[in-house]
Length: 199
Image (cartoon, rainbow, N blue to C red):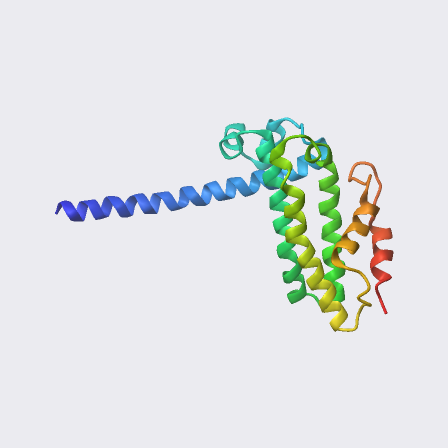
């Protein structure tokens, strides 16, 4: 009898714990998405309450997930890198051709770079917590860009004359100084660059 009650209690705890974990994951995702958007429009020193309002959560929830602003910045950066890394294979599987997948991914990459430049002053600070981020960026995104370039080249859609890191550096150079509030849109020049890969 005691054993049965113990099993019921254990199961009850498990069933209650899972929704709590799911809620925590949803809250974390909402915070990261909100912080990324706020960092672009208001800067990385935007009030936490602004991020909380956009995420639809309380400031205490943000601090529970990310005790310091630096923790939040690192998490936003890594979250965005992961999202764009995952987008490459998904685009190859869903678009009409590898070249269209490459173009779509580069367009997403431009979005990322605009956000990254918004974080540039912090990422270039002396805080050692930010040191691994550039290496993480290269490790995750350069292979994805290479996969897209190779697929387009094998399909005869581009001349494979650029290394992935060279293409990404070229796109990055065109994005310097651009952000969503200044009115500068690097996409027309980026489109010219990508069109130049055509045979």
